[in-house]
Length: 140
Image (cartoon, rainbow, N blue to C red; front, side):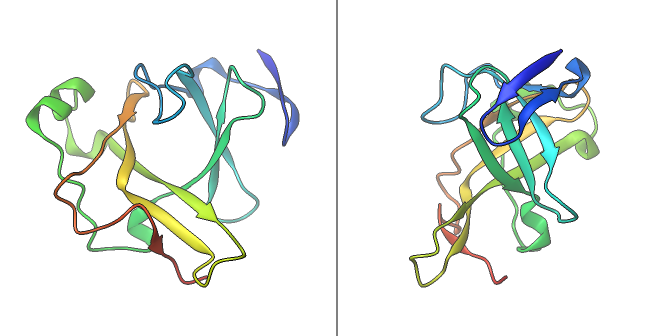
């Protein structure tokens, strides 16, 4: 399938690489399907909406910057993800870049994106008891 995007132009999309977020992402509840795209030769990826060419998030594996990060999911959340093997749990953090701030690059570690890497279905979870915030500074 081919889709048109604002940032990347027309892209050939492999349906097997779609990540389904049945509840959407906070603030984008109406958008349910996304796919990951590499960003140059970096660990950063783009999470592009399949259905809205203007919506894409920069995301990254949070453990690269915060090795002590442990997003504790409730049993209900684990059941929703249908995780059989802990290695199937994938976690991404939305990256924010604002060059006008003292700390221009931050990660949202309080509301990570979690999904089952086998069935590519997930959701954004809000970690209410996390010591991490929605704007954790990243040294770049």
